[in-house]
Image (tube, rainbow, N blue to C red):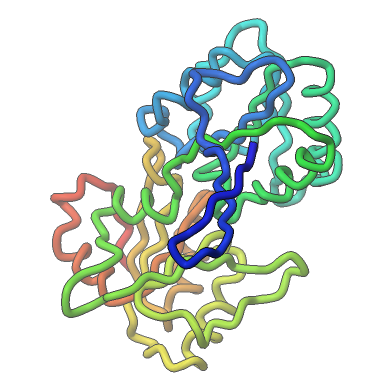
Length: 274
């Protein structure tokens, strides 16, 4: 419920009830958008774990480290709606309809998304469908891969004297086009970019990045299969092809990657250094 309040200047402000839930799990007729984190179930929030245990229906992405799904109640219905290369995906419209129908039927619904629901996860597209149908919804934030993967590889996204900003970017937009890389400042953390690494590298070099800029590709972050490839912007495409990295993978570009290379043993990660 929203209520109107007035600021000191007399302007009306809308004060909205928080969309972060205070309960441990969804109630009948509610949909919770829950962040699954990067893969390690130990990186789930406590609220996310409780929501999974109490849900009647869980629609989940193609999650790395599927151990997270072991937290579901044995009687919960589990539906895989993840998008995989080479497979016909469940459309966003179908997912929206399933969420609405289940909530209207009185089920406790969890939409489980990799990382955080609102970071390159189409979470708000689902919110718009729920709002249109009058369905109550809440968000349980998750640890985004954009934060977790670099940390798991011992890479600081910011560092005094090297990187004062971070740009989070997706490897393609809704139409499949590359973003405008000219505006990517500081450290770049690129989601879903591994399959288009050649185009990404060419675009960044054209935008002014040096071919020798350090690059790290972190695959299956936080899981037992994690591996980090350290390379450069000019060589990353060939090196990634030779390494045959698993997915999902996050591409980190910037001088901070060079710091991690010097302390890889302290990070406790398996590394493939090109």
